[in-house]
Amino acid sequence: MPVDHQLGPAGSHDRVLDGGATAVAHPNIALIKYWGKRDERLIIPYVDSLSMTLDIFPTTTTVRLSPEAQADIVTLDGTPAAGEPRQRVIAFLDLVREMAGRTESAAVDTRNSVPTAAGLASSASGFAALAVAGAAAYGLELDPTALSRLARRGSASAARSIFGAFAICHAGRGVGAAADLSSYAEPVPVPEFDPALVIAMVNAGPKAVSSRAAMRRTVETSPLYRSWANSSKADLSDMQAALRRGDLEAVGEIAERNALGMHATMLAARPAVRYLSPASLAVLDSVLQLRRDGLPAYATMDAGPNVKVLCHRADAARVAETVRSAAPGCSVVTARRGPGARLQMGAGR
Ligand code: PMV
Image (cartoon, rainbow, N blue to C red; front, side, top):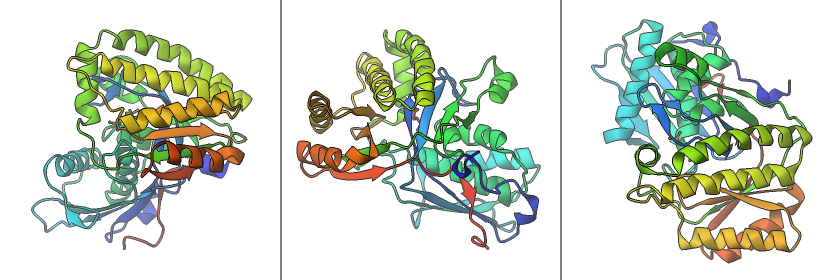
C-alpha cells in the first residue's frame, strides 16, 4: 500500500503524553459529494461519497489535557473561539472523553492554513486533525477506520481526510449504533492516478449559509434531492471504475455532473440555497471553453462559490491562467493528492 494511503502512528499508546498531542490533516475535495444527513446527531450521511485529499492547506491541532481547568479552552488561529465553532469542538471532546472514560478538560489549539468556512473543506481537515490529536491525548487506541468514524462525528467530510489520496465514505446502514458502526471512510487504492486540482478562490470570505443548515433545508424542501441521491449511486460506481482505469476524462465528467446536480438540488430548495456567484459561473464557462479547445478540464464545487478544476498535471499551469483571467482578482492555487492525517512526532509536548 502506498505511504500516502496510510495513517500515521496515531493510535499508539506510548505517544499519549501529558504534554498533549499534535496532529496534521489536509482538506479533501469530494468527486462524489456528500449532501444531506439522515441522522443529525450521529452525522450519518444519506449518500456515499468519494474524495481526493489535497497536499495543501493543512490544519495543525494540538490537544493538551488540563485537569485543573474547569472548562475546555479552544483557540482557533490564535484567537479564543466562541459560539458555534467552540461548541462543536467541545461536543467533539465530550465524545472522545466518553469513549476514553476520562473527564479532564483540555486546551485545543487549531491552526488552519485554509480560509475557514469558505467551502474549502476546513471542517474536514479540522475534525480529522482533532480526531487524531484528541484520541491520542486521551489515550484512545483507534485504528484508521475507527478514527474515520470518530472524525465523522465532527463533520462527515472529515472521515475522508483521515486517509490520503482517494477515499470513499460509506453512508452506513440501519439506525443508531448500527448506522454509526457502518458509516466510515476507507482508502480507494489508485496509486497511479495523480491529477492536478486547480482551485479558483473567487471569494475566501465565510459563506452566507452553513453547509449544515443548507443541507437540512435541501433534504427537507427540495423536490430534486431524492433523484440526485439516487443518481449519485450510479455516479459512484462509474467513478470507481473510471479511477481504476486512471481515466481522467471520465473521472472529471462524473465529478462535474455529480457536483452540478448537487447544486441543482440546492437551487430547488425553498427558499433556494445558492452558492454559485457570477464569478463562479465565469470560471465554469472558462472550463467549458477549455474543453471545447481540446483541453480536458472539469469543475467541481462545494458549499461556497469557489471552483475546483480537475485536469492533467501537465495542463495545470494553463488551466490556472485561464481561470485567473475568467475571474479577475481571484486567487488560484494548484493541489495534488496529499497525505492522510497523522500525529506530529515530538510536537505538542
Ligand atoms: O462535512 P461538511 O459539513 O463540511 O459538508 C461538506 C459537504 C460538501 O463539501 C459540499 C460535499 C463533500 O462531500 O465534501
